[in-house]
Every structure is written in C-alpha cells, then in structure tokens.
Length: 398
Image (cartoon, rainbow, N blue to C red; front, top):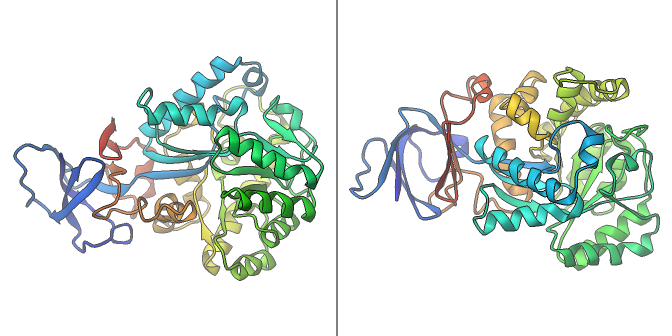
C-alpha cells in the first residue's frame, strides 16, 4: 500500500472528490481512497509526501513509434532485428520515465511492438501499457522505401481482408493505414491523397469484422474527408482540417477522433536536431506544424474529440522533456485543454476512460507527480515528473 500525502489536484482531471488538496491511497493496482489532505493514516503503508505537488493522471501517447531511436533513417533501417527490438524496449522505458503510462504504437517492423508489449506485461522490462499496430499498411507511394520493410504495400481492396487477418493473427491491437502522403517520406507530399474510397471501405470493414479498427495516417483535407466518410476511427496528424471535415466528423454516430502530433514537426522545423536534416523535411514540417495546431483548435471548438500524439524519437524525448506540451502551448492551446488531451481525451479515444485518464477511486493508479502547477504554467512540464506510478507500482522517480 502507498499513500501520497498532501498532493494538489486539478478539478477537471479528478472525479468524485472536490477539494484542492488530498491524500491518495493506492492498494495494489488501483486508487482505493481519495481523502482530505493530511488525514490518511495507514501504519503499514509507504508514505510519499507530495508537499503540494500536482498529481495528474498518467499521460498517453496515441501516436508513438517505439522503433524511432533518432532521425538517422539510414542507420535506423540498417539495424538487425535484435537491435531493433532492444531499441524499442529502451524507448518504452524512456516513455515511462517521462510520465507516459499508456502508449499506442502506430507501426513498427518485425512486429516488435507486440514483443515489447509482451515483455512489459511479463515484467521483463519496464514500460507503459502498450497498444500496438504492426506493419504500416499502404498503397504503393513515394518514399515508402525510406523505411525499409516497415510498409506492407497493397493496391487492391480485395487484399484488405487477408491483410487484416494476417495482422490480427500476429497479435496487433489495431490497424494502421496510410491515406495521404507523409512528411518524412522522401518525395512524399503530405496533402496528397494516395488511396481510394473503395480501399478505405475495404480495410475498415475488414477490421470491424475482426473486432478492431483502423487508425489512418492522414494529413490532407481530401484524405480526411474520405477517411471520415468510410469508417476510419482515428485521424492521425489531421494537419489540414477544414469546416467540412469538422461537419463530417460531428455527423458520425460512432467514435471518431483526431490525434495531432506536433512534436516531430516542431523539432525538425526548429532545427533542434544535431546533424543534417534534409531541407525538404524542414520546409514540410514548418507548414504542417502551424496548420496542425490550427486544425486541432478547430476540432476542439466544435466538440470533436482531440487526443495526444508525439510521433517523436527517443533521442528527442530525452533531450527535451515535455516537448509536446511546449509545442501545443506555443501554438496557442490553453493549458487545461492540453492536459485533458494528454489524459482523459486520449483515454476516451481508446475506450479506456473507465480505467484510466482521471484521478478517481477505483481506477488504475496510473499517476504522475509534477513539481509545479501545469494548469497555470505549462513551462513546468519541461522537467521530468518527480514520481511516476504505473498500475500502482512506483515506476520512476526523478
């Protein structure tokens, strides 16, 4: 049993408790009590005095790629399978240290997301709760070869059922599909539509039949529209949203959401990387980052569910803690909105808001203690959390 005494709570991220300060009791994997500050008394418990630090739900990254060690793509694609897997496991540990207790891996080679998830679940390595795709399913498109065998290419809607069956048989949790061009594919045009409505209908129908869903890489306006019309669950990146896109999403009766990913574009166009980045990538990232933030604001204002993704490599996570928080804040998003996107919004998107995403009695004790008040000053997110709890266990202390 663990007691976190005298912690500060944010009302919008707390359920079933109305006071600003609290003592929180963890028993096993769960939050078992939230009590008025300085009242909890458990003789056998491990006690952590938060001294007024802010207690948040653990963060989500719904657009992770554990495979990305850094932005040296040539070296990355030359890794052998064993080294590739070890890098993914190391990246999972980095995520946990930074307060991310749930991630969704949106594509990896050799099905290493599945192996990393299994290693975490068996206690072999430390890491967050992992939800994973396998290969990136894609039409033949410019720049796919930049990522070695990461892409599984098909140009036929008739192949979709077999492909989805194959992926689910491998153990994936959802399907990743490429609808538009990619920023970091050499020669790729982010707004360019690279598939057809028939192909999208086929893959979403196949996924539904097999009890899963499709997350679509989708920057461009036309691609977003046909993705929404044809059953895609999450629009990844969602860079060029217009009013019609928003209207179409609001008409959907089932779950649909956007997952912006500012971090990767922000770091490239700000030239934070050490070493050379192709000028083509810098220019594309500058345009995409600003538009992505504007699109997220449009969706939030209209009531479309917006989640949290980073698309960021391990090197940048280590060098710049809280980068996605800083990027969204710099681009004009309000602090509380940012915190909700990183927690409860993302929990809703993956249908786990009954388990995670807020501080509530009975939910998993996926928790982060921050030294400062991020709802008032987002700059405090540029430091590592003081404590990270993953399903009731102290996973990291910094």
